[in-house]
Image (cartoon, rainbow, N blue to C red; front, top):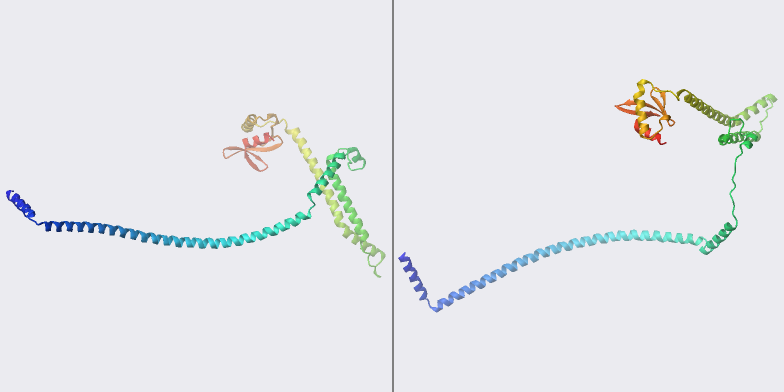
Length: 316
């Protein structure tokens, strides 16, 4: 330990013995090192800035290329758009010319105002009351349009159509018979043969008109028969089923139907049972069945849940 201290002391004495010239050289060397360090730092900073500038220049160049491409695309699109606009402009100009020609062909506004004033004066001075036409049933019976005592004005349209079709058929037959070409007489034909030939030709030209007339009469008669059958069925149904009651095995459906009608504020007196699970309410006939654990109503081949069906027909 003592030897180390002695050595350190001797070293310090040797340093103190250095000449001023050596001290100055050391200071200059330190200054040079410091300046070199600063220069190196500035160089590194400039190098990083140059590299950043080069990278920025590359990015700007790429951006410039992208902008040039976009400008070229916009120019192409603008040329197409300009062509379309020119075509639209030409079409609108042509339409405008057509509308101007049409407008110029119409009367002037002053003329229309004058005519409107004249019509207003006419309407104000002259009031035309529409005539009310009434069809008298007695007159229709007198002229033979209504023939039976149970017929009324409700069949007037159908009867008039019958008369018109009948008249047209007879008129066609008359015209065809009058305009038909005369039969060429042969020397070998007798008068009887000629008469038969004339009747055959007349039958050919008038058969279609006769068929149309008969067809219309058959259709009218069929309609009358259908109406009569419907009236008979209605009378039979009212007489035989109005007071019928459901059998014991159908009481479950009957009770459920009446509960639905009561909840929907319906009239239970309008419910009638026709037998075989068939009921009638408010003019609708329907059959009640239990299908897939659900009570349904079958009406005109339509299967509807019973509650929905009854709620709909109650308010009709």
